[in-house]
Image (cartoon, rainbow, N blue to C red; front, side):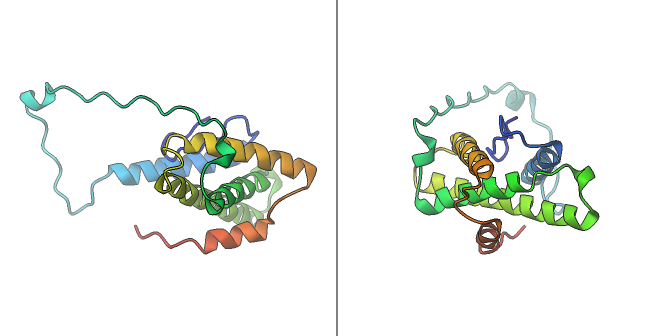
Length: 174
C-alpha cells in the first residue's frame, strides 16, 4: 500500500492493520487540512463555462526510480529515515494485544515515526537527492533494512534514540 499524500510506502513491510490505519488516518488528515480553506476565507465561486472548458495541465512524468535508494541524501536524512521505520515497525502490535496505556505509547511512537519520515523526506528533497515522489522508494528501502535488523537484533539505533530524534524536530504550527 502506498500513501500518496506523504510519499510514505508501507508495501511489503508486513505492517499490521493498526499501523496502516494510523498512517492512513494521518495522511488523510494532512490531505484534508491541505485542501480545506480556512473558515474565515470566503467560498470560491463556481467556474464560468469558459474557465471550466480551459485545458487541464498534464502532470509531469513520474520520477525515475532511484538506483540505490539507501545512498540518497545526507547522513542525517538517512538516520531520520531509519528511525522512522524503526519507530513504526517496532510498535506494530495488534491493538487487541495492548492495554489502553500501551496503545497510547504505540500511537505516540508511530506518530513520531511519521514525523521523522516527513522531516527526512523534506531533507532529501531540499538536498536535491530525490524528488518527493522518490522518497517512497527510499522509505521502502529503509523499511526493508529495519525489518532485517529487527529480526537479526542488530539495530543501528534504539527506540529511545529515535524517539529523541523525533522530539528534537522543529515544532510544526498549524
